[in-house]
Each structure stands twice: as structure tokens, then as C-alpha cells.
Length: 96
Image (cartoon, rainbow, N blue to C red; front, side, top):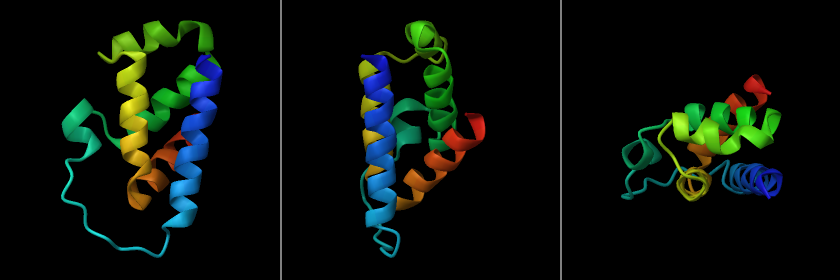
């Protein structure tokens, strides 16, 4: 289940990044950092760590004060922004 969530998160981020590379829209929505206190880079690193150790996903998330649902929600929020999606993807690749 967790592997599927990670794959979905990566697919969402990749799609959002590719779809909106040329858009420079300014969003009035709060950023992920305000909602989870984690930057897109931190979320990307966290996602890569979960991918490496899927059996320890709950423990990894708990260390950051997140539940699985909060992590998924934060990743989805990042996927809404092309800039944040790119930052997440770069951090995920670097940490993988």
C-alpha cells in the first residue's frame, strides 16, 4: 500500500511539473511549509526514504510528526505548484 502511495505521489508530481512548466501563476493558497512545516525538498527526501524502507514508513513519518494521510495531503498540495513539484522531484531523485 505504501509503495503504491509513493508511486502515486511521484506520478502526480511529475505530471504537475510537466503540465505546468511554462505557467507562472501566483497562488493565494497557503504553502505546504505552512501546513506541514516541511518544505518540498524535505517532503521529497522523506518520500525517497519511505521508498527505500517501506516497512518503516509509519516510523519515518512519525519522526517528522506526520501521519500517512498528512504526508499524502502535503504531497498533493506540492503537486499543485509547478515550482514546488520540481523542487520535490529533485530532492526525491537526489535522496534515492
